[in-house]
Length: 150
Image 1: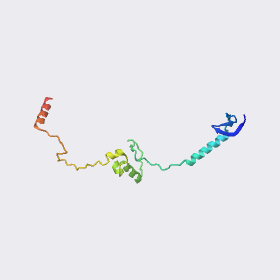
Image 2: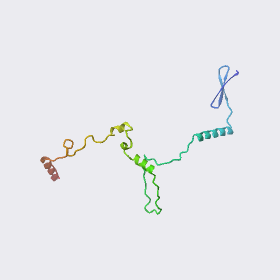
Image 3: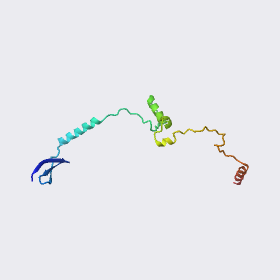
Image 4: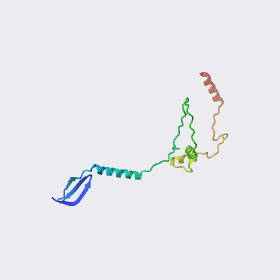
């Protein structure tokens, strides 16, 4: 059988198609150390081209910040930290309720309680909406019986 000119390379092996239609596989040359080192250098160069350094660090304003005091017997002076107004504004904005942070609700579950103000102004003297506890002669008598029976 003789080899045709079509050869394909799959996973380091060369496959030759013979004229009879069967495929014969032959081992390709193994990669030497220089070749592997060149591949490694090329891979590192590609990674470095895509890599960007992030140098601006800040505290996440959406996370609770726990400030712990120094030990009571500590003699080191307290550290004075200069105030950063941008951070303080972001921190206060993150601590606000969603209705003050955003103009409109962001999710469907926020839509349910977004307008939580009363539709009718409350009047404590209006008996139609306020059902306070009233005592009558019968309830006062029953309370006195229960109090003295114990």
